[in-house]
Image 1 (tube, rainbow, N blue to C red):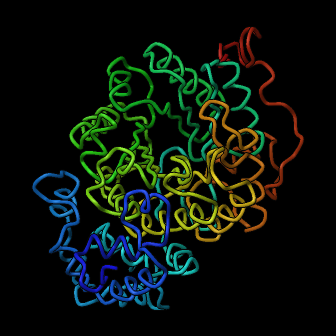
Image 2 (image 1 turned 180 degrees about the horizontal axis):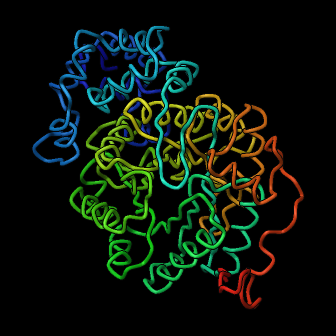
Length: 462
């Protein structure tokens, strides 16, 4: 057994990481509980300065490492510079440190520091630390305010059929979902189909004055082409990872993301800010791409957040259980990973959400997802997913439903984004107390083959 106290930093980080199948698959995990505990004790004694001096992925060969090093804010780091990882944990959780203090420190915190401190924390520490931090983002709705829980309405369809997408969209809106974004994962990459989806979603939002934003979650290069065509793109989506090689497997690099952001900003569709990017991440991405450099998956996940924060995103979410049991084997590992990701993302200054999910061949079920959803709601997560019946019929995985969002809001006393909350009441979908009503149907003429919409304008999606 390797003595963790004598390890290089990336080995120490891996041995200290709570057990998960991806690190075992990569041959990086601690070989025993004793080795894991010893590694965490050693990690707690490491100076934070060591993370600046010892990159876990070489600076010379990785643009994500260069981004982390070259953008590090020494002034923001100064108050932390004499701390060890253990000191850092105690400081984060102390009563004298609030959200404003943590926000000021964020530019000085590297992803590796965030990952390290998370590894020596219990679940309750991750929740308490994250609950202090409000990373607010603004578009047509304001996401991340205290006392609020937003959602992405995910009306996917296996053939991108507009009528099927519409049915899910209306169902979600009726149940109070969609204040973070209406986001469709397209089944294909045909530009004409993608452009039509973008147009239809924008038309629906405009027609009913819905205070939300839309996103068709296609590859960033396709979105750049759609913008060049003049399509009404609100948010640019891309999956990202924590190493240059893993991002290359997605067909992206930092310059392409910058180009896409500039293109989206040129449309001037965000009335409140310059936040026009939507990123998704997930533990195990770099390992699945063969680009992990011997670094554990949770540390690499935190490095993906450095990529995200470089582009001032409107939304970031970890699709925590989507990659499969090879990386997160069961409900327990998924729950831990979701809390880690949310905490690390918030600590680095990101408006974090979570797709509380699992694949059908994973040792997990909806009860596990209920636990993670509840814990994240208590920890102040910005948004979660709203999927019809919690079962995504296009991506073939299990997530959270529109009803699950209502459950979390009721149990924890949370509400939708304020603009969306007012719209729901105006449309008769909720009463003055925010409770769902049967109401009148505000969409009687937007189904297929129903002719012209209200007010004599063509407004139907299908």
